[in-house]
Image (cartoon, rainbow, N blue to C red):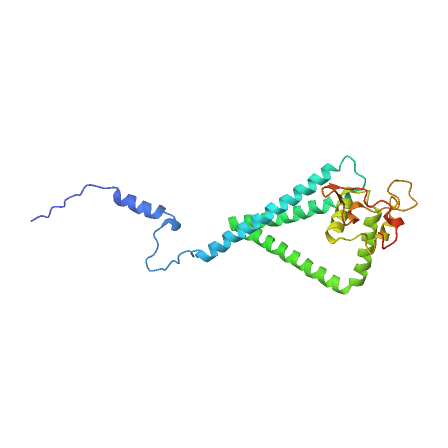
Length: 241
């Protein structure tokens, strides 16, 4: 008997499957079941807690840095009209520089911790190590050159007494130190004779006097501060003063 060949209808699915298999890129192909693909590492709860604590710590220092920067800028703007000293010797400039440094380092720490950026974290770690190295170096210098630093500090404090009326920030600082330490002058109340306003040869009303912050009891009647309690003190003896 003659065999009959049955012609099956042509289907394009086989060709499409072959074409799809050939056109798929290697990256989207199915993974070989015989090859082991490792899972990405999971973050432990301890690491996550450390990350959040580091972020909050840096955020706190960022806010403190911005506060210091705002105080410094406010002080510079408040004295910009009646400035009697150059900008380089203004103590408020230290607040501005310290606020900028603390804010920049803390911001790098916040962003590096939040975004897991290795570059920012390296910058933050390098800045912290640099600050720590400067502190250690400063401590060594204090130990090695303490005599010279003592003399330099004494000259600086005498200069503060000499320029007491010229800078309001310096005047506020000297008054607060004398009130808190209950002292007058550097070594004795006679140190105020170097001030041109408190010297006994000065023509003003403050001649032979000391600031009111030198008084042990500057309040009159318990509530009203007496700004003239130091007048004429330099003309008295040590016991009477």
